[in-house]
Structures are given as C-alpha cells and as structure tokens.
Amino acid sequence: MKTSVFCAASIDGFIAKADDDIDWLKPYENDPHRFEEFFASIDAVVIGRRTFEVVLKFGSWLYTKPVFVLSSSLKELPKLPKRAVCELINAEPGDVLKQLEQRGFKHLYVDGGITIQRFLSAGLIDRITITRVPILLGSGIPLFGTLPHEAPLKHVETRTYPTGLVQSEYELVR
Image 1 (tube, rainbow, N blue to C red):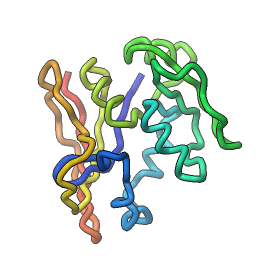
Image 2 (tube, rainbow, N blue to C red):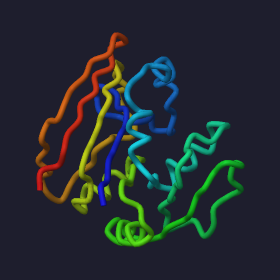
Image 3 (cartoon, one colour):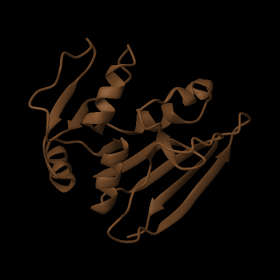
Image 4 (tube, rainbow, N blue to C red):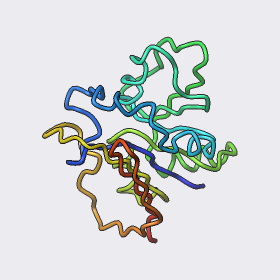
C-alpha cells in the first residue's frame, strides 16, 4: 500500500495556528497547486480526530473519497454532512494500513499533524509533498515533530508558483 502526505506549511514549518486556525491559507485556495491531480490518485483519506473536527467546521464536505478518522477518544462519529463517507478507526498506524489494505485500498492520503507524525515515526509514509506558503506564523502546530529515527528523503521535484508558493515532493528512502 502506498501512503502519501500532501500539505501546506508556513515558511517556519507550521500547518495551523495553535487554535487550529488555517485562515492564512485562504489567499492561496484558488491557486492551481496540483492538489486535484494528487487527490485523483488516492482512494482513501486517513485523518486524525482533531483534523476531522476542523474539516467539519468548513461548512461543506471537501472529500469525495472515503475518510477514515483515527481516534482513541471518540466512540462514534458526530452527525456527518450528507456526502460524507466516514469511518472511525482506533488502531496504530501499522494496523490501520493492514485493515485498509485487506479492504482493497491501494493509495492513502495521510493528513493532520499528529497523524502524519505517527505514520512517519512508524516508517509508514512513502511520499511527502509540502507546499510552502510565504508567511511566517511564529508559532502554531508544527508539521513535523520529533522522530525516533532519521527519515532520509529523496528529492523528486520542486515547483514554484507566481503567488510565492513553493512546492517540493520527496520520497522516503528505505
């Protein structure tokens, strides 16, 4: 099974403000930054509870693929928007991959700071695409936390956009 991260981060490495605010991304939401092509390549999304709660506040449901919400604290999902196809999973990253692979999924989009960090720590991310946004937040939720080991990366490609976005893709070296 292939696992990929596709995310935006401030120049100083934050994916959201401490209160989960991502309004600083709004000026760039209509930039063509290859998210649609990436999303077409995956067949399911894995996100953590906190990211799921942020996404629910957007007003409209963003995902057209099944979403698996990782949580050890939720016992059931709240009322979902009409188009949402979501399932709650309480398992470690390796077990999540085994369960989803057995169900026929082949390419997962892993999203959310803590979830990304947990999958990276377990050595279960294959590809990372980071879009650097030209802003310094100064503090917030970091994209990467401490890892129990180094995670060597192989640079695949870097693209720049007229609005100042810089997007780099990496493969994890195993």
